Image (cartoon, rainbow, N blue to C red; front, side, top):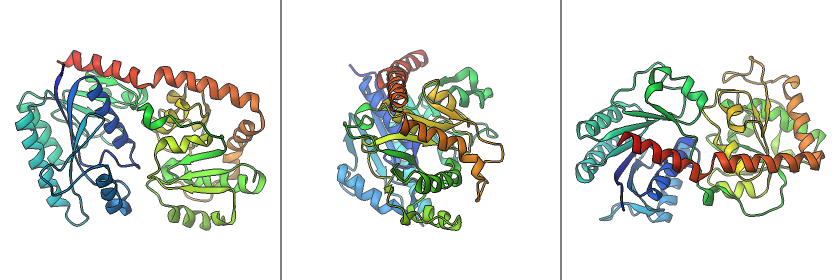
Length: 386
């Protein structure tokens, strides 16, 4: 029996591999469908990796999207996804089409709930349009971007951590903490030999300059440790350019491997032995850490934002000096990497320690971050708002 219609509106593709917010939105959609909601997700095809726009549209077409056909959507995991094609230079046209389609869907489906994020003028107009039709608006906060903004036309907020909840006290009475949703079939890896020290999305906010110093240490002192770098918003070319300015040439070292951001998460963790997140900004959550732990892959994280909360007592947390932040540029003092290097070598050199940490983090994550736990939270939230 269906609970009714639920509409999701976002102005980027929910299949964007470089966006945690996109991942969360799509996984929320799938879990809500499993709970018995008729879920429609309208989005554009835009991604945070602008260099991949056409590549991403080709990917969506490989899933079954047929732009220009009578039925332009695709059905996946019980969710109907519709897309407005986004092209650089035609942003205004895309927004108009998105707004028109969103209003049409609300008129036709009369959803009980709208799940969304973003606060452009059009997004605010659509939230008001929904509330005027007795549709309750759920707004997912994924970062700190709205601390100085008043978000109008919202019935309830969803945040991905207790940490982020503390950053928005004015909304606390109508806010729920639900950790980023994970779909096990997309995240749990096949069995494979655990080899790589892995970092995802090495951009400045994620600790790029500290990471390059770590790469230098590993390449020179521990060439037996293979490193896997997974592209995100930043490309290999951008990473290499920064490294070269720090007098480190990535291509000179055979133990450093690169993976594109389009590679499914579960494939990354098949051979990941250890994941590091040296973020220098206050993270709203820590999806990569959650995914790794769910696979029994130990994690080392910085002490920024929600990362200590996400790993609990089942990961290694390393404090960063206050001088390391989003504006930090090279060179990073070698003293900053000492504890990171020590912890990495400890995981690789002491098998008993590694096995203990891998086992404990998997048990913790499967209890706290499983899809069944998330569905329990969603069911309770929507029942309370109905």
